[in-house]
Length: 338
Ligand code: G3P
Ligand code: CA
Image (cartoon, rainbow, N blue to C red; front, side):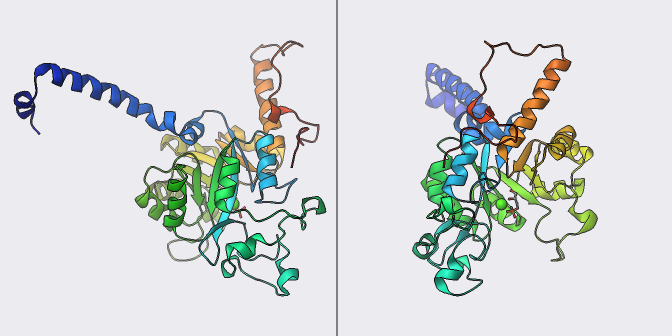
């Protein structure tokens, strides 16, 4: 449609109004993703993020609702989980391909190495996924991904890791629940990420690294496991915005990632010395089995930086700690519920 055509078709006042509206919408669009999608805003944040690995798996059975609630109570910015597909195509939350380690399937069905994909969702949800960890969690079920999202998205942001299945199934669920870009999706399978990005370009993705396979089909080893410019250039082609890497990262690689507009998160960091080392390199997020410990590490760094800058400690009337900041000396949250 040419401007001449517009001038002939519409009075000038209407054109002026349309132009004003489009300018306003244009400026809204610049911030639309952040305004509408809390995950985008969170990931863009300048402060390092604390990400609960399989929930709060140091103190609750991994990938269960109690574990997710505990991570949320500890103030985790994001709560990570893993999903597979059941025999009847439901998305279920569990880490391993087999049921042996984290359920009572071996006893129940008198067989070892029973796979997740060989059982229906109803069968999987009849298992006990808590007693293996601690009898106080007996009766805890394997959650459906849908149930896990309902729980986590009430107070945090989910970091979904795909272990098996096509992107279309995950995209369908996220669309149905109105959660596109209200969470982050990650995978070690960069082919899955590329396909996901093609089908739903709006969704924020994280590429786990090193990826499961090199282009020659081999598993990366040695130097090939380190975060590098080569990996980061490959990673960008998947559409991912976050490099979620093992601990083999360097300050240079993190700086390179930042120059490319990428964030770097590191897994799985469960001690303060390592956390400090990685934070000194400038990483943007730490995935941990103990979110309270990492929150405590971050708080200590902020306090030290403030003292270094000559800012005195808050007095008795100073700011109160947030719920996730109430910590016992061992980093265990003092307000834990199951
Ligand atoms: O989020 C990173 C981490 O979960 C990847 O390893 O084996 O625990 O799923 P894994
Ligand atoms: Ca995982």
